[in-house]
Amino acid sequence: MAVRPPRPHRFDVWTALAGLAGGLLLWGLGLGVRGADDPIVLFDGRWPLLVPLAVMAGCELLRRTAPRTALLTGTLALAADTMTRGSIATIVMYTDLMYAAVLYGTPATARRLPWITGMLTIAATLVPYAVWRVPEALLIGLVVGGVAFTPASTGLIVRNHRDAAEAARLRAEQTALLAEMDRVQAVTAERARMARELHDMVANHLSAIAIHSTAALSLGDEKTSRDALAVIRENSVQGLSEMRRLIGILRDGADDREPAATPTLDGLGALVEGARANGLDVTLDATYDSVPAPVELAAYRIVQESLTNALKHAAPGKVTVLLRRLDGGLDIRVASPYGGRDTPRAPGSGAGLVGMRERAALLDGTFEAAPESGPDGKLWVVRASLPVTDIAQGETE
Image (tube, rainbow, N blue to C red; front, side, top):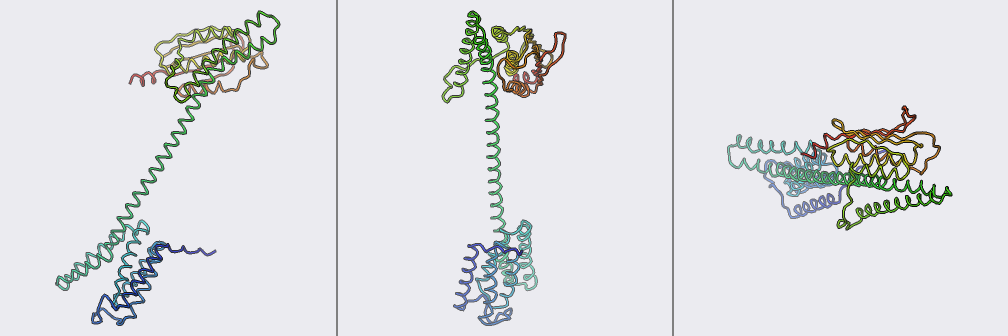
């Protein structure tokens, strides 16, 4: 299938028509560049100069779609025009073709044409003067420079400005794209952080509420039911309070609220006591000192979520929480009885393990949770190792 040639640009059509009309006007007035007695005029009369004029006007139609072809054809038309009385319109249109060839041509053409026309201008200045030894010979170089070198240089300057503007536009678009990507990543990271905080703060209380409400509904003992309802009420109040704090942080204009205190490892004792009140047999063995705040928060949340999972899934037995500050890191181990329960005491979504793994990964730590066999039977063990050396050095700097 034949490829359809591109249509001339509308501006190029008007340029060609304007050049042709101007040339015809000068021809009608009998105005030419050279007289009939000029020795280089080989085709005397008014009619021969119309042929180069028409060809040059046709080349103007191609100044944007095929600039190199237009320039080569226009050069032949200009050479033919020099053998007639000549037309100023033909010369002016040729300068536009030279300008367009540099502006719209290939990068190689844009680099070479100013250099070639510059060398031709120098040659056209020096050679005639060296041959004829008259000052008027210098005018030949001036004419060649005005017809060829000047429009080529102008086209190169305009092209460089356009390329610089396009490069600046592309850099601006890339900067905006990178900024949008950073914004999306920041929003995604913030949403993940809020999801972890929401889950860790509320899941423990809701799990206790679900478990004790089940016990209150299934047992007929009034005292046991009252104890379960007391635990439900306490966890409801605490969960509601933490939810309100989180909502206050998220609301616009919440800066005037008192910020909620960030959990620290000093609160592990109260966390374990709360787990015991919810029915877990928990023991805490913690040895640590000078732990950075990010590590403290991550360790607290990992222990909190591990106890919540033990409350929902663990079999009856002892749950042990072990924290040790070793060289370069804080090791966490939470072990609970595994097996012997077909269904969890409260529904779970698996988001807790994902959140713990994310918290460890954000600090370049390690995390694993899997069943293990030990002297006391099969256990579900959560292990995490959080580096503290690099973080502590970063806070010091």
